Amino acid sequence: MQVYSVVPSGLAEARDLIAKGLEKKSWIVVAALCRASYEGRGASEATVGDRVFMVKPDGSFIVHGPRGFRPLNWQPETSSISVSLEGDSLVLRAVRRHPREILVLECAQVYSITVGASPEEGQFWMYMSEADIRDAISSNPREILGEDIRIVDIEKPVEPGFIDLYGKDDKGNIVVMEIKRVKAGEEAVRQLLTYVESLKTKGAKVRGVLIAPGITENAIKLLYTTGLEYKIIDIKKIYRKYSKRKTKEKTLTEYM
Image (tube, rainbow, N blue to C red; front, side):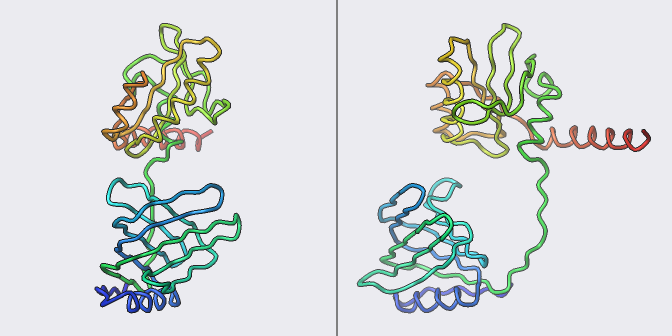
């Protein structure tokens, strides 16, 4: 990939560089002081602050703040992206037609712009999906979670959504399990809580267990204040055992 980085002398130069990158469908990464607003299936607003936003060659538009790994805003494969000077601001508009959504960034200052032309796609392999982890836990809960849980249902539908694993422990309590293959945040805890609360209304004794390789500090605080549980898992370890079992199953099947 051919890459060049520029510290623009002003917003006019920043506009020209971004416009050129958009025209050539380059990979554009910008560090700027800006605010963001979104309207579409919902609405959101991020006040003025330091942001890093990225435009990918397929038109995907992603905005990050200084903390966390989740983007503040994003638009997958936008229909159009425009850049213009409006008063004292550099304004980018990312529009998606179906469904109708618009993401607007108003930048008061642009610190740097990096443009990558003709990026190499490469290949991507994901060792385990959440479904793989779910199936591995379902096959042997004690080995992975350290306790005897009888799995009753997988992807059990409830009013808020689908429970990854629904089971019962040796005391007869219902165990609701939410699985994440990456570090879990507050959103995962809230998701688990909605599932637990939906079952508690029926008078059942319910345990909520978040299963993930890691968890944020804020998420662990929320988890324990809401009476939920957390079990850490080693995805590499699960993968090694799971892949061996899958290979063995495939080999045996070939001879049947």
